[in-house]
Image (tube, rainbow over all chains, first blue to last red; front, side, top):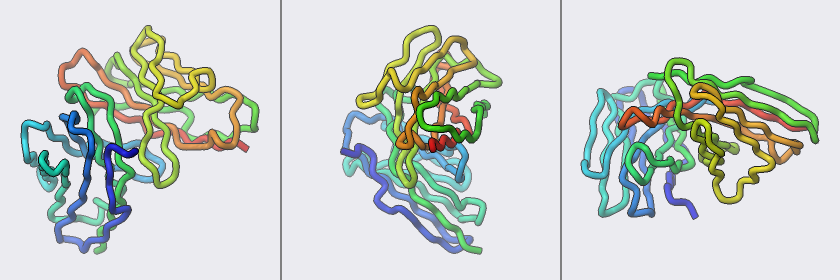
Length: 113
Length: 117
């Protein structure tokens, strides 16, 4: 039973537009959420995180929104750039940033010039 | 960010042989290292967590006698796949964290592609 779900395996967006990647979770004990970006044959690289005490965190073009009541988070990338094309993984943990990470299956983002 | 390396990046071996994968933290001391496995189009599945100088903690369903993990120093952890079989073919990724540094994130290595013939 997947505790972290990314229901869209892929997303295609035009350069300059907004990319919205979604993630749902089932475990109400999760209190820390992260987004990672991954290129083929490489390890994930950290993008942005959010603690459950917040509902929004912003870093440059990347914003993560957390809706605890819906157990849903999303990553907004604006404006999208071709270099953003990669697989994006949502991850969650109990015990804050020190907890073990549970990953979703990822969403492949393609940003077209 | 901190750098984690893995070696080798790619390995092909015959069924029945053992393969060792190294994970190194290059510019920080990793009190905790994690080993993940990723199948195509699947999520990263945590296999085990190891703290320096202690035995690894394996996730449910992961055979500890098949996937031997050693974390003998603060900069090196090894994963040995013993008597590898074709179903062990996968992408193995390690990550490392300095647990002494408060809110410390995990830094991931580049991964190792294992193919068992």
